[in-house]
Image (cartoon, rainbow over all chains, first blue to last red; front, side):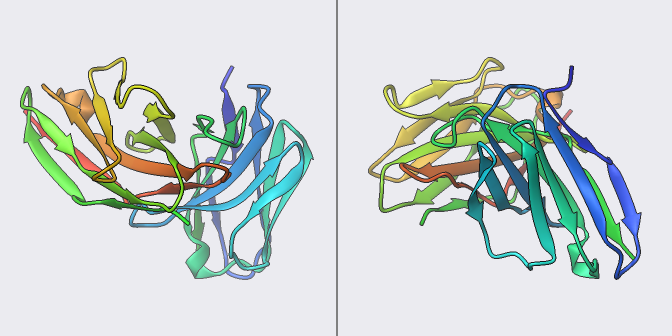
Length: 113
Length: 113
């Protein structure tokens, strides 16, 4: 009965490959997010969807594309992976985007070799 | 736009001693403030938040933070730490009317037996 789940937990792949990370929340929340945490633990928002509509689209390479098939899912697809994409990617959700507590998934550690 | 400065990247403290983790923010609009905790190899969990009302907010595990508007601060305190408090602590700010949560760079709290 995990609130926010991500798959896979670990992802090791080679440069140039295309990969996807999946996120699902069973909290009934309307808003979902993707964050990137670098090796120094710095967290940066990448994207956010509210009711399947993109509301935050930070400056990230267009190799990264979020997809929200429904309110409970927000997937992250990455094309042509680069070494600098290695990081931990966190999915989160909140009931409301303004002032709402965000619930985080366990993270996906992506290693690009 | 908002920004957050966590003044200490690492704070070592002996068990049962008090601790303060400092957080300052910058914003041209009113803000919501949060402290999140990240235990090793886990996602972030909300520790406490300030949305409005009383400027002193408390968590269920003994932490408290005080919103100081004049000093633009939201420092986190605990009068007596436990080994289990060892974790990374992140201060975050959301501007009123914004969907975006901006995180500080984190403070690693290490509790020494």
